[in-house]
Amino acid sequence: MESETASPVLGGAVAVVTGGGRGVGRVLAEALAGAGAAVGLVARSADQLAESVRLIEADGGVAVATTADLADPDAAETAMRRLRNELGPPDLLVNNAGITGPIGPAWEVPEREWWRAVEVNLRAVTVCSRLVLPDMVARGGGRIVNVTSRAGVYRWPLLSAYSVSKAAVIKYTENLAQETKRHGIGVFSVHPGILPIGFGEQALTAVVQGDGPYGGLREWFRGEFDAGRTAQPHQVAELVVRIAAGGADQLSGRHLSVHDDLDTIIARIEDVRAHDCYLLRVRPLPPE
Image (cartoon, rainbow, N blue to C red; front, side, top):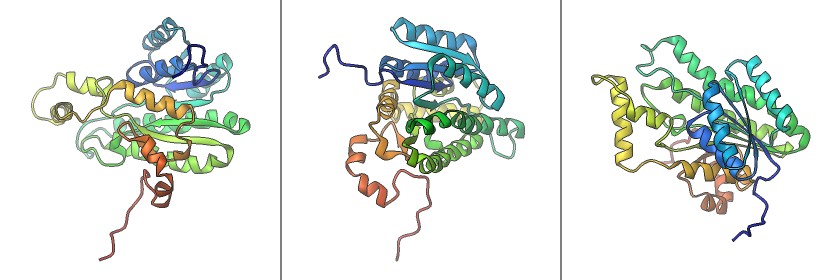
């Protein structure tokens, strides 16, 4: 048990959370600040960001926020530069900003909306990572957490843009982890689970008519909640704080879920490596 005078686990660290104005982004920002990190927040809504900052500061934390559309490289660079100037170079980047994209058969949804989801969900991750990595490489350490989804390793019919973009982020995580390993940098994909906030809340409370794609999505979410196949915000917050503090560095490049038993996985790290577990990969058929 820690004493009351023990240093916060992330004391002195700087963390940047994209999509930090609401939902899981706000939860993660509050948890990281509560663990001692100074937190920079980026999102598109100034009002939501202001509320996140207010909540963090009310608990004695340090937070700075700036607005940007992170799919725009110039806007992202301006935002990240401002946070760096205010807080210093980040030790941790949480790429959480994302949208669901259009709902419906892939050949029927508007193409512009489909690609917009990919731009936000994938390009924002690559752009923000490129902006923080030079400092991390120069310092010889740092961590990047990419908030993804089970949809990226399985499938999610009628939400193809979301599923495809999340799969791409998971594969980007694997590649980036290998490229930055020699610089002491860890990169992780995290599935936060189905939560009663953010997208989960929106889907459950959506007012839809008929049995179309939107109605089907709402009923699917209701079924998952009724069956108990969900998670709570504090669970994903605890996982990300543990990663931020270095508690999962051996699993850099892996796709982790809020439902995973991290201690068991780490205890079997040699098996994880030998069998390429927790990666997005093709597994051949077993011999007959």
